[in-house]
Length: 63
Image 1 (cartoon, rainbow, N blue to C red):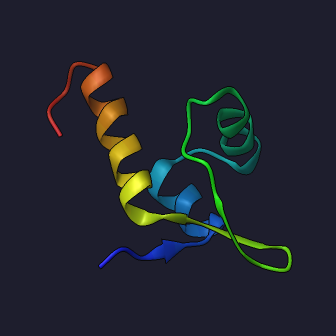
Image 2: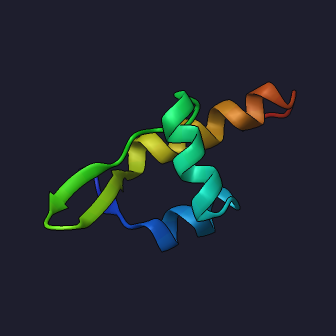
């Protein structure tokens, strides 16, 4: 099952703030959000976990 998580949880999991998240989405280096209706958006938890794994691997560390 794939959970949808909101921005505060994304910030907590990744350690990066709102501006960096949206800048990364714009340049393609961070997963895009999905519309939940109205102004609400979220991210697929699996996309965020995948991004975290990539960052760890790029740093030469094990996930």
